[in-house]
Image 1 (cartoon, helix red, strand yellow):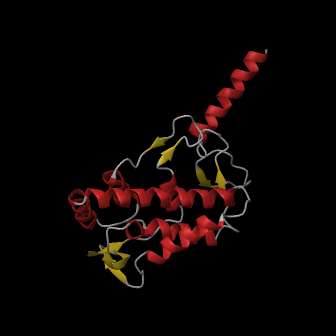
Image 2: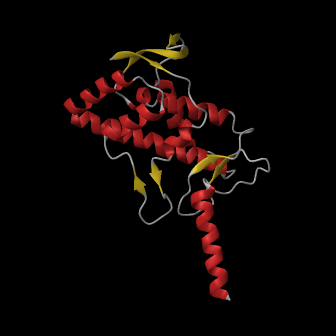
Image 3: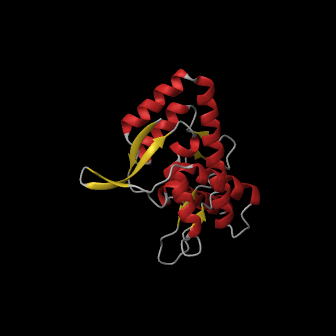
Length: 202
């Protein structure tokens, strides 16, 4: 559909993508990808893709609503596949064969990143053909997921100990014992619950 540049891919980009659902373990999980506009906005803010190319994709989604819905459905399926795989790794469990096969197929469908380009004093991947399919729009996310899975034996992938949250994160603490996705949110919630429990018992 169109050529574009993609900047360097962050290692934890795939984790950020799974965070488009909040409070997975709660009674009312919060879905942030409600339509293709939400998806494209997230990609623009996080995935290092050119704004104009994404705007062209946006116009295509408005002209093709049924195809756009199929694109969104596939993007959400991809997110949940990545989450289940990395969650299994975080728990030390086997990666489900079905999910692994789905992810490898999606990675195989991404556009080749075999050409470098200069862009405003930086370097980027030049993608010759960006098509309106999930594997192309989520290419940086999929590359990130593949790279992180390959590095899983030396990168501490964790799942938040808050059973209502369950976000995934990389534990970069010196002790390697981080339990919460964010001490300011889930960590403080746990502290508050423990404090309340102590007061109640007293």
